[in-house]
Length: 129
Image (cartoon, rainbow, N blue to C red; front, side, top):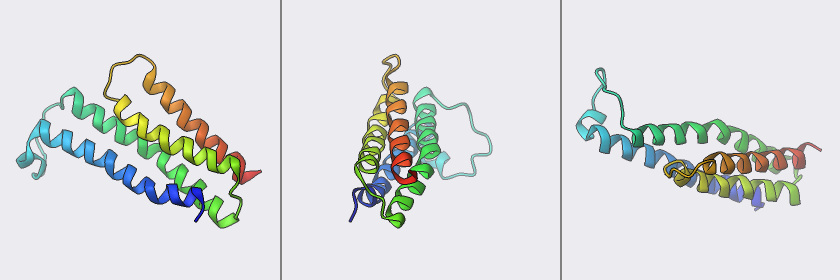
């Protein structure tokens, strides 16, 4: 199994982690009873819930790109150093991004996001050219 396909499979765990963090923070903020309701009258969330929602949203914005590029790499048989490095960079940067969203270190979150984007670029270049 290629590195890209292996990381694609493990990215499901990554996605579940983002979703788990977001849903846990939501339930801590609003309570389980409210989370199980229709949520028609919802107050503003606290900053941790908002950060969890933003982190999940940000992950989902790039996740589809990773899936498409990893599948294209596998189907085309074009796995090479660029695609393998790109996949690993994206994958590990996305793991680092989640806790970085919750700490207040200036520019850290943006730096990690940029690194993950560089991974997607490497993956694209490796499979497209």
